Amino acid sequence: MANLTELLFSLYGKRWDFYQIMNRLEKIMSDANKAREKSLVKLDDEAIKAAQSGKDFWYQSEKTVGMMLYVDLFAGNLRALVEKIPYFEELGVNYVHLMPLFDCPKGENDGGYAISSYRKVQPRLGTIEDLKFVADEFHKKGIRLVLDFVFNHTSDEHEWALKAKKGDKKYMNYYYMYKDTAEVDDWNRNLREIFPTVRRGSFTYLEKQDIWVWTTFNSFQWDLNYSNPEVFLAMCEEMLSIANLGVDVLRLDALAFVWKEKGTVCESLPKAHTLIKAFQYVARIACPSLVFKSEAIVHPDQVVQYIHKDECAISYNPLQMALLWSTVATRDTRLLNLSLKKRWYIPGDCTWVNYIRCHDDIGWTFSDEDAASLGINGFTHRQFLNRFFTGRFEGTFSAGEPFQLNPTTGDCRICGTMASLAGLEQAQTLKNDLLEKMALARIKMMYAVVFALPGIPLLYANDEKAVFNDYSYRERDEQKDDSRWVHRLKTDWKGKLIPAQKEVFDFVKKAIKLRKAEKMLGGTEITFYDTQDSAVFAFRRGTIHVVANFSERPAAFKIGAWSKESTDLLTGQKYENFYAQQLGPYEVRWLSENL
Image 1 (cartoon, rainbow, N blue to C red):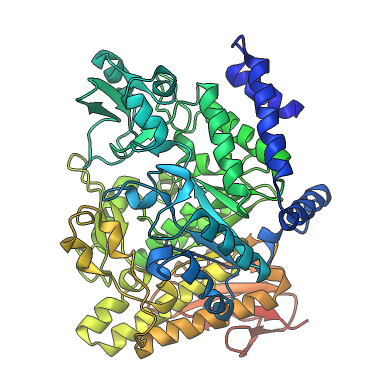
Image 2 (image 1 turned 30 degrees about the vertical axis):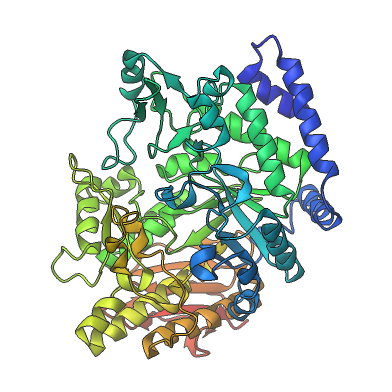
C-alpha cells in the first residue's frame, strides 16, 4: 500500500482531500478482494507464489499459445463461444483474447473500442452473466481469458458523457472540455493526428453545447481526464469489476495517451507510467492474478518502457510483427536481425506476445535510427512497404488495403489477412501453382519463426485457416471507410477449406504441438545469430537452432553447435552441424542438437 500511496501522491498529493481519496480507494480494493470467488483466489495464490519465486509464470510457458477473435464473427454470441472450446483444444490454444464486447454505440464504434458501459455486454453477444459463464468454462479447460481495458476514453454515450453533455460539472471534469478555442489550439499545436481522414486535430466541437471535447481517436471517443482523481477511482472500480468476472489478462488499450500535459505531445509521458503503475498496484492488492498486457504501438524505445512487473508483465511485440512483414517484402533480414538483437531483451519476469497479424492495421514501427545504420531511409522504406503491400509495386505478391491514408504526407498503414498479404490470394486468383507453392512456404515459414520465439505466440482468428480478404465491407455504410474490416471476417464453420488452406491449418496444429513438447521453447532465453546470408534469419533457444530463409532463392547458414548432428523437429530430418546447411526457398528448420 505504501508504494501505491507514493505513486498517487505524485499525481494528486497537492489536493487537500488526498487522504480521503486514499481511504476511498482502500475500500474499493477491499470490497473487490472480498468478492473474489474461490477459484480466483486459488489463481491469486499461484500468482503470488510465482512472483515470490521469480519463476513459474504461466505466460512464459512453452505451453501457452493464444488466439484473438471477435465473439460475433467467430461464434455468434458468448454462449455459442463455449461450444468452440473443442476447436481451441484441437489447435492447442489456451489463451483467448476476446475483442471488445462491452456495450458500445450502434453504428460507428471503432470496432467496440468506444465503451458505453463497462458493466454491460453488447446485447447481441449476451449478458454479463454469459461473460462470466465463458470465463468459468474456459478455466475448467485451462484456458486463460483476455479482455481489453479501454481506459483512455469512453464513448460519448457513456453515462458520464451523457451527464457531461447536460452540463453536470462533476462529469464535465471527467473529460477535457473547453469553451475557449484558443485553449484547444494551444493543445493541438503539439499533438499528433491519429486518424487524419476522420478529423483534423485532436478535439471535437459539440455544437449543441458550444464546447470542445478532447477526442484523440474518433469524435465519439472522449478522452478521460486522469488529472482528476475521481476518474482514477471510478476506473479502478470498473477494472476490478471486470477482473472479478474471471478475466486473467487485461490489454491496456492506448496506454501511451492516458496522461496529458500542455506543451508536450501527450504520448508516453512520465506520469502515464505513474498512472499505469498505480493501476497495477491496485490490481496486485485486490486481484493478484490479473496480468496487464501493453498495447503501445509507438517507437520501439518507448514500447519497452511499459514492460515491467510494476506496469505490464506482457506486451505486444509490434517491432517483431512489422519487421517480419518488412523482411518478407525485401527478402533481406538485416534490419530484422539488427533490430531484434538490439531491442528484444526485457525484464526476466516479463514476456512478449509475438504475432503475425491482429485485428488492427500494420504500422511500420521500426526505428529510423536502426534503419539508417544499414543505409536505409526510414521514410522511403515505409513508402515502399505501403506500395508493396497494397499491390502498387511491380512484382508484389501482396493484396492488402491501405488504412488511414494521410492526404498531407501520403503515409498509411496496411490491412489484410495473413494469406492475402503473403500471396496466397494472388496465387489462387491467377491459378498459378508456382506462386501458390511460394505463398504456402512463406506462410509456414512465418508461423514457424513466431512459434519458436520466446513469449506467447498469438493467432488472429481465421489466419490459421489461411482465409482471404473479404472486400464486402466496402458495401456497408458503417464499415466502408474503415479498411480494417477487410480482415475482420465471419468464421465459416460449414465451408470446406481448399487444399492450400488445409495445408496451412495442418501445419499450424503441428507447429503448436511441437512447441508445447519442447521445454527449451519456453522461458525467455534467446541468442540471435549474426547475419551470414542476408536472406536468413536465425536464433538459438538452448540447443535448438532456428534458421529461416526469407526469400525464394536458395540460401546457406552454419549454426554454432556443440554436437555433430541435429534433427529438424519440423520434419524429422537429420543434418550435419559442422557444415553450412543449404536452405531451399522459404525453408525453415528447428534444429535440435543430438547430444
